[in-house]
Image 1 (tube, one colour):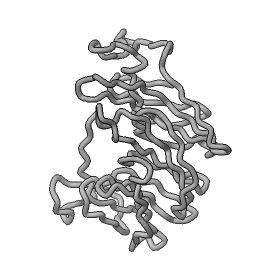
Image 2 (image 1 turned 45 degrees about the vertical axis):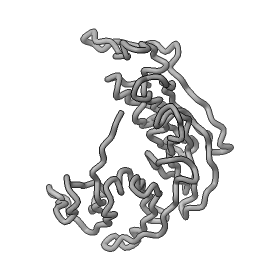
Image 3 (image 1 turned 90 degrees about the vertical axis):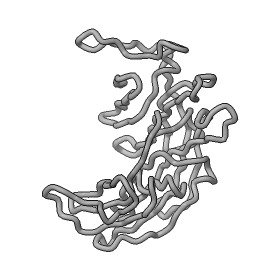
Image 4 (image 1 turned 180 degrees about the vertical axis):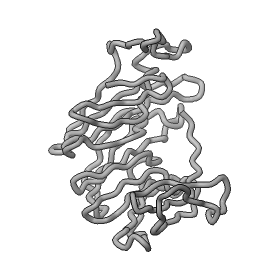
Length: 246
């Protein structure tokens, strides 16, 4: 799935942090509407400079994926009216770009893709890179093909990653999609694929959409995009398939 990110800054509100953006480089045109009250803002002035944010309430830091600079930006909101950049971590040490970030129990997990593939842009296995909340590197774990989103389970004992398995443009390389699970206690990794999984039609009879060509192979055509966790189950959106997995 191709993405276009036009988020130029990050606005902090009393109720939390939300992304706002505009369609040009004039970030002064960014507005916040509704009944929420803006109390402070942090602006990267970069296209794609603030795509995903995670917040750690203990350190009072935000962790921001800066796709333009290919950095994980750590921003303090100890003074919420005046957020300040603490540090930027160069993510190219661990891959070619960062797609997602999550925080739990003083650990920061970052989904990092590897695009150093001669046959396609994003068709190699990537990494989940774990830092402490100060930004010190703790571990790098190789996961599946194109890790696109990362989250923790409810008690912070596992890291779950959606490995999208996106093909290259002409489908000469079409990796499998999967869900990866990292055990935080020892950083062991399990990869859960879709081979043999039963595909259930919707209540109106609509079947799960696969690619009629060139594969029509659910192991390759099911492409996890986003994960949320509840009561030891991971619920996964399969955007290209117009489906959900549990």
